[in-house]
Image 1 (tube, rainbow, N blue to C red):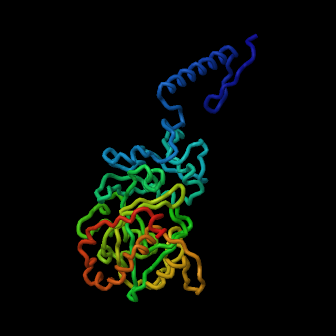
Image 2: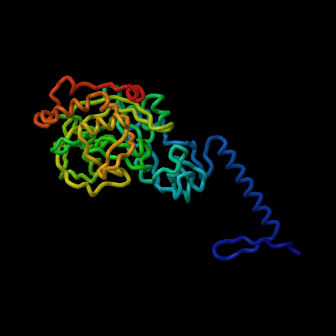
Image 3: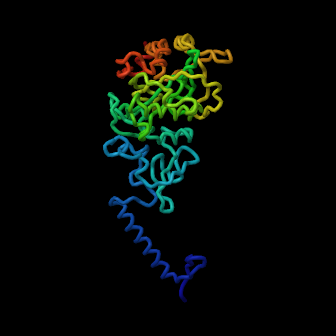
Length: 363
């Protein structure tokens, strides 16, 4: 006579409730859910959703250098969980969004379209904090590698950052070139100078001091990371600061560069480079002046095997070479090494404005 019974799981067992009590419990739950949704509508996020879904890293922090004194990732206490695939996580969120799982904030590392299918190691490197500067190379703040290399941010302005380019010569006067790995997000499968990357927004690499020691420390870090050249082989004192260039160049329709690039020379015999990082570098080769002139003229390179292959160059390397600056410095290599500096004092203090890559390449 009490009507059908409803089963309710409580702990490990089940408790039987009369139908009337079960209906009352159900209606109470619906009322509570409606109340929570009304609160959410007044500005509180629903459980498991980001308060402000974003399709990229938080650019408001990245491009407000006076307010952003820490990494754009560090303002949240998050657990980083790389996604198994680079599209969306199971919750439908994208790279940089915050999920709520089990009451813990989680930053998803699945990507929006700019990073679709990208190598996970290279995606992680996009979190590094670059040093933002103005065209006079004065520090204005910092932003992630992701934000500073998005072409839309470069075109809007505010993404100019510091970089360095290492030119390492052996005692025969040959220049070591590297081919960037296909996993690289910007300028993959392109030949360039020995090592190219960025000083990071950290005290030891921000330090300018004598001959820009911060950039030289950063260069040693990346020589080891990319080519396996340890500080025992090349240390900051071995790297000679020459000058700086300013340039802008697209990589494709999504990515690009806008940099104040520190030119660093070094002359050393290194022997076999058998510890290269294949995620960064796929090939290396020494070239002479005449070899490089032929590469610029023919867009081909004679490999160590004797085969001739078509080559594509990075824009900064091609700009420096085609401008004549590289060949001029190359001619002065002995004097530069002896004096540990470029002989032309005025050129050392100058920032050479190379303009847009398309303009130089068309000459």
